[in-house]
Image (cartoon, rainbow, N blue to C red; front, side, top):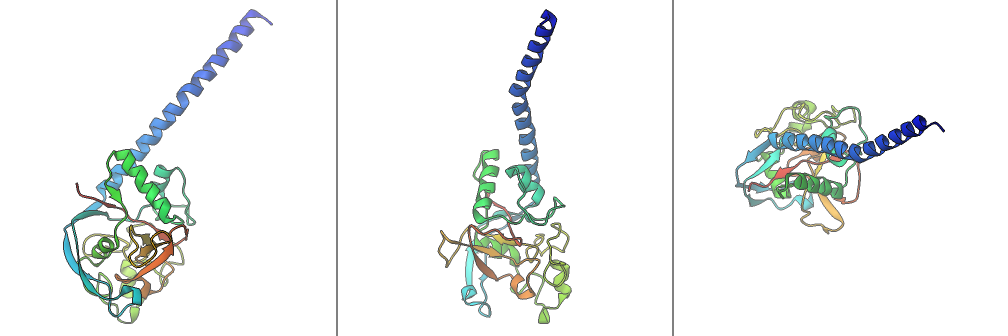
Length: 254
C-alpha cells in the first residue's frame, strides 16, 4: 500500500475518533439548553396563589367527596397550563402520548410514577427541590378560585354544553380527543383547563392505599359534565397509563 494512502487512512481514523469524543458532549449541551428553556417556560407561566381557607368536598357528591369541610392551604405557585407534550418530551426524551401531532397538546399516557420522575428531573436541572405535583387541597383550592359552586364559573343548570364548553373540553365538544392547552376560558385565577381536557395526577391520595392508588382531578375530554366538577375526585392505579390522564405542576415558594 502506498505511503500516502496509509497516512490518509490514519487521518480518517483519528478524525472519526475525535468525532466520537466530542459529539456526545455537544449533544448533551444542546439537550441541556432545550431543557433549561422548558424550565424557564414553566416558571414563567406560573401563577402565585395566596394561602387561604375554603370549603373542600361536596355533601351532594360521591361518598369519597364527603363531607364538605373547611381546610387551609399555604401560598404556592401553580402552572397556568397542563404540562404539554413538547415540554415533557424535551425533559424526558420521549413522548408517550396517544394524541400526537401537536406539541401544545397536554401530555397523557403517563403514570403517577412517570410524573414524579418528570418532577425529579426538573428539580435536578434547577438544583432545587421546588417543583412537585399539587396536593388534593391545593388542586381543589386552585380549581375553585374562591367559588363555592359546582364549577369555578358557576353552576350549570342541567349541565348544558354551554357555558361549560366555553371553559372546558369534555364529552360534548371535544370530538373525543385532547386539544392544545389554554384554548378555553380560564377560571377566575387565570388557570386554564382545570375542568376537562385531561385528568391531572395529585401528590397525595387521601382515603386510598397510597402505594396502589393515586388521585386524579379535573375530568377529561371524554367525560360527561359531572366528572368535571371542582370537587370531583377519582382514584387510579399509580402505574396506570390512560389517554385522558396528564399532569399540572406546582412550585413551593421558598
